[in-house]
Image 1: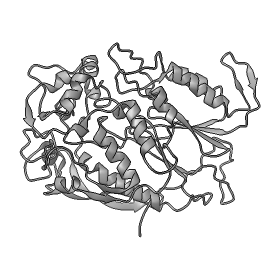
Image 2: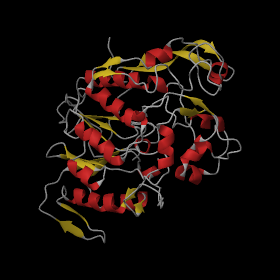
Image 3: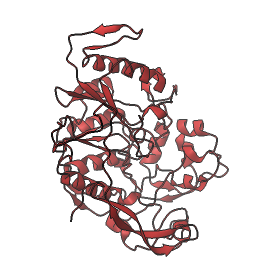
Length: 440
């Protein structure tokens, strides 16, 4: 049987394949599907039936962080800070499975294409919403790989020279990382990770992608525009990114913990330590917000622009509106502050724009001083989509050398005060926290 979702089958830890000093590496085993839960926030009385009508059947995908795992502009050596007080701004800087993320997205795309119909209404899956951090390090090649995966065709998620030159290579001078080829590292000794000779070669080889068969739209996240999701890609850093040396450790005597502000403003200073020669690749260059939008406008498929419009290029913005139907409006927000830091916020200009988009789909709403405003507009339900949700809209940074153009910044309290005036807002999709939950 071919499974598409966790309604049909879930996974659980299976038999132990290899024991480590702290945990065991296990095979995955099948478990029963999840039970359906009918939510009653909108007053359905806890009932659902096949006679219900679907307004929009969508899927959310978030925080893929597709990485150029060989890039000289990454900070994998920050993993040496893990477990120390204040490490949250710097780790995770490398994950053992990240070389295989492209194949995981391809499998996810195929699974989305297999979803048949809503169990409640019989509706077909109509839309996939990517809520940001589709890239890992805001690089051109990562962006090109992401869009190619969704369009379909041959893809080789590989950069630089002819052989793998990243931190998972056999012989790399550190045991911080899992080395699939034979050898020792902390992942094998502590967590029981196996030897898988040839895994890196297979992960970075050319493979055929089918593409996503469902219309999709996309949000801009902090990893889509900032170094390690938090630092400003200034000119000095950009030079490191396309150069032929890959750092292997912090510079001698460098202090990072407690100095987030230094890292966010000048990431290049932490790349000046010992390094190894690698093949340079100009396709690794850092991208701008405009280039992120432009790539979506140039990518085939529906809807045209995948949530963005030509006006975004003119304005240098990455927020927009997609009207799914006469009943549903999707509003895509850009919560990334390009002046640095991994948490988000909205610029004042964007917040005023948001009010305008909400007013257009309300027959009545409250003004900012609490008066009832009546309009001739037709009511539509509103779905918001953004990378950061309310819990992480805290970033007020405004840097003289930063890249953000929309100031002052607005945090969650200011945004939610606007939303509370517009009763047709029924759902806010977000990512960033890497937690699957529903907050009422």
